[in-house]
Image (cartoon, rainbow over all chains, first blue to last red; front, side, top):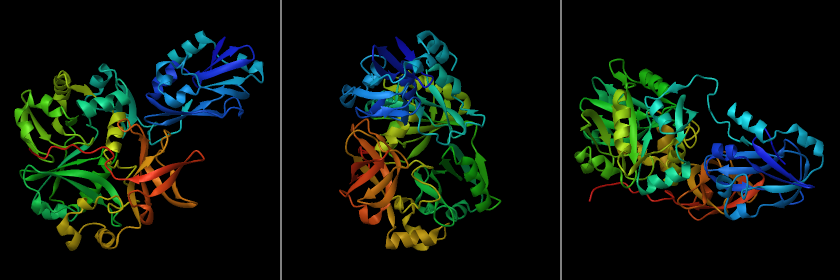
Amino acid sequence: MRYFTDEHEWIEVDGEVATVGITDYAQGQLGDIVFVELPPVGTAITKGKDAAVVESVKAASDVYAPIDGEVTEINSALEEDPALVNTAPEAEGWFFRMTIADAGQLTELMDAAAYKAFIESL
Amino acid sequence: MSDHDTDETLEDLPLAALPLDAWHRACGARMVPFAGYAMPIQYEGILAEHKWTRENAGLFDVSHMGQLLLSGPDLDAAVEAVLPIDLSTLKLGQQRYSLLLDENGGVLDDLMVSRWPEALYLVVNGATKWDDIGTLRVALPDDITIHHMDEHALLALQGPKAVDALARHVPEAAGLTFMKFGRFKLAGHDVTIARAGYTGEDGFEISLPAAVAAEVADLLCAEPEVKPIGLGARDSLRLEAGLPLYGHDLSPETSPIEAGLTFGINKRRRTEGGFPGAERIIREINEGPARRWVGLTIEGRLPAREGAEVFAGAQKIGKVTSGGFSPTLQVPIALAYVASAHAAIGTQIEVAVRGKRLAATVTPTPFVPHRYYRGS
């Protein structure tokens, strides 16, 4: 199941682990991405707080944690090829994987249909 | 996700529309607020547009900039009292870079001055044009007329193939050399074309009536070498070219000598003075400024942006004024004011970005060589 935040992160839940990235809409707004700063494995992250930074040609932008948890893996492919976030934001351009501290927080997020309606309203 | 940069977006003010507003939108531009106007930040993407301009030719709408025509009796003497320029050496058909300074030698704006018949034509920055008009009106005698050519648009055609594309419509334009201009017919319209720009590439700036701007933009973009290019690539191109952006690299808090713009204080004026801020400017020319604006090449891939602090060991020695990832060089580059003791080419320093210290080296500018056409 995939959920979305109103800050344009996505989170894909697979059992006990979740994968986080930014949406296609987000990458389109940011433009060409030249660097992604990811949290070290083991970092405890908090819903709504800074978790990563994406640097596009024009600016740096914060990426927020969609839920509470601990970072278990980062996408090392982004180090060599940050443009993956532009070409495959919701697949190979994922940012990090994390544990799910409180599954209840997921219910506060949007599903794909709700997110689609949300970006159309922007 | 949210932008770090809040910038001076003037979000609460209604945005003015450029003459080419509808044209940009039809070309697929994303419009953003800049200098009080809705302006195209990008069309297909900043990296693609940057690369296209370095290899082909890009058309930039810079109609937000102020075009001013000064005329009146004893014009040269009146303008020399305001700008540190030597107008005795500025001939008809020539353009020159100059600076509007305050009484302390701080930079109020940087601008181009061109010698027209019986007049001087100025191009000033968009964000500062209203203040500039005010400053000039107060500083110049009442019998000098300042005509704000706000019925004119300004297009820049930049890149190594700009001359090929433009010469098909204006053959005489190919005969201009860097910082020269002329009056020509383009698609039957009277236009002024200068061989100049803000990308480091060969190119032209075309001043034309706003009413025909869309027609001319269509004509130029129909040439196979030409695509429309947005503000985003304009910024990354000028950064690689080591050219200052007013409001970021230059301000009332910076002097042109610190910024390495001593060429903007023309030779005769360096001894004679007689312009605002002359005392400090001449002192800094003779004694050297306490800090200097330098290029930095940063290790790794993380860019250092405007505001990042620069260190030599524990000692804070300066601040980044512009920075980003260089699409041409594929490394982060920046421009920074640093204490003169640390300004020598090759000096190893550090830049602080989000709590990390990035190793950086003071590097000659331009980062990417200029390719101006100075004649064969």
